Length: 327
Image 1 (cartoon, helix red, strand yellow):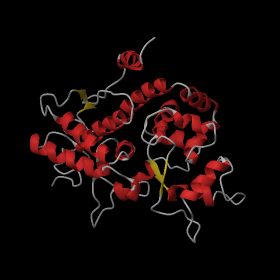
Image 2 (cartoon, one colour):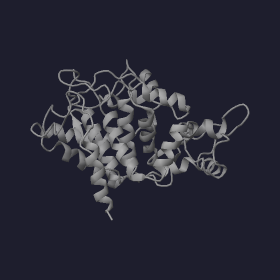
Image 3 (cartoon, one colour):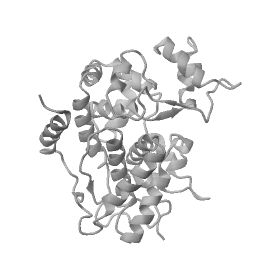
Image 4 (cartoon, one colour):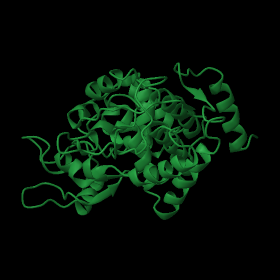
């Protein structure tokens, strides 16, 4: 019988025979430009994870939110100015995003070692991969060579899928970025790790519709647990600072996310809605009992997502400070 590690290797060997790399990106891109780039990034992610395991899902989400607005160009990292509200202060981000300081520390070390070479967008891509690995997911080689964008607008964060989306809405949001519905189902499995701020659950728990205060699809016991952890204020809005875990194993990349859906324990409407379509039901059911297959598919989907609308060559810039565009 194959050991898990051997089976993982076989899956990845088959998988890596055919994945596509966008023009301008390359595995081993920094090998002769900044040889210790990946090592430095991994060290910073690992140190942060040792202090706070929640940093792993935070970094993964940060990369996702970056790629869904203007492509994977590091624009989510740019600070707002008096004349521009940046992505990081848009409604889907704000207090909910984590991991910026990890990127800052990695960037400072990289600038000291190889000034003006490693982009913030690439740091995000490597950090997301390392975060997945630290939480028990599969390793993959990151094709690098991304350049950093010079534009960041909070108004454009409407491209990030909302936790209240229906199946049709979230499918379209992913399609807008060139991702299939199957890849969407795979990537949503990342909600097996991490946490959510309670205010993102207000509608499901306290203001679902004119007919029902609470989403009737929520498992009653699960809803009761969420309400205990996310009590409403006087206006019926869940607390702005309290958080709840996405599921019962918030620091482990496993397929329990999919099993939970069949117990009506998807945290967001956009999670539970995967049971609203026959194809998505079938895929979720398959993943719920085949964690290794999901993890291999997740690698494939992450590689594709991390190449959305990348800037390469002479496009964009290599920011000296990830929070500020070069002048």
